[in-house]
Image (cartoon, rainbow, N blue to C red; front, top):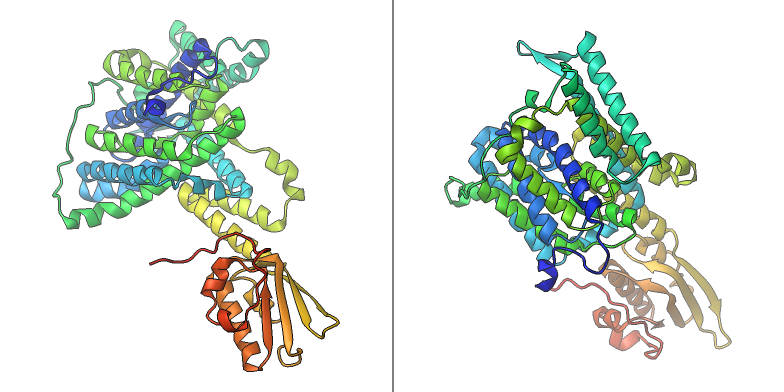
Length: 512
């Protein structure tokens, strides 16, 4: 419990200036994104801001990755658009709360570690696709709506917006070369804001998206029928949202681990995300997960502790309560410029440098994951497809590695020395290694350099022992684990095992 109540990591020295300034910068960049996705889902703009505050404060305090920022992310909200449109916002809040429960269970049962099974090409594809999405979302800010018709900016409006955006990008890119005393993103926002305010420049501002003024979020039980039919409606949406949120969160956690050369706690973060979404469901937030772009802004600004996340969340709350009129005057060009720099930084440019050194199947996986992420905006599906293809390729390559060295000793006993893993993918090749009909009366199969991995391998051992038994020949299986022996139906009569040298690895058994 002390670990969860420890808001700050006292094991390292905290740079309070960096933490505070990073938190303020993150809040500035999170506001327009939260507003945009709330409006996209047909929700009140405040629903997005509430989610940014609730997700931010809960995960900053209880999460497993200091420095990571959570909020009302579009990846999770997009999943719920259809539910809100067909059944109303109350069903959406219920689905968010249920998704939180599912995420909390993942954390409690320590299932978050499985995100480590995601291969590097999948990570590259995910980040590259996400970078393109972030960048294109900023390009969309150059559109305007007139008389109900959406179109691109033209004339002076376009030139002003583009000029201020380029100025922002230049400040963010060049200021760190001069000084790192303050976050470049915050300086860029303040400079552009000052220029627009001082010269009364007419350009697109936050207020053109929506109002950010409101009151404290209040407790509210979703007004839905508590029936099995309702559960059947919201459960699929909640399950998908929980999966999307956890995948994006845990991938972001791994990304921060690499940047900071530290290690976060995936199960604790999953549980914190679940708690935050349950709170969202009962306090009018649209739900969310970790936000890659804002996390990069936070970490890039020097934040390494929980304080920056708390400052960011509390800043959003203050803005909702009293700071709305001021924040609404911030030029969108400043926020667009900051997010464009983040998108460029998110893209794994190193993937281009090493692409000619990567296996062809890894290149295919990288491109496919990026394409699915960009086209479908479904991060969970993109990662799932990448993991499945990578797993199939691994199984195929491993299946080809099984070998059998054969020799007959001075006693006329034929030995098969097996090399490589025996599993479902290699069982057919394994059986082809044996010449049962022409082998001598006594045969030894040695697994010292091999490993029996799954039930398909066990079944194959049963088959080969049965074949030799049918021919009236004696078979010895050496260097098998005790787990394998228990599962071999003919073990008692035909297996001679060297117990001393047996390995201790386990075979997974379905104990239904």
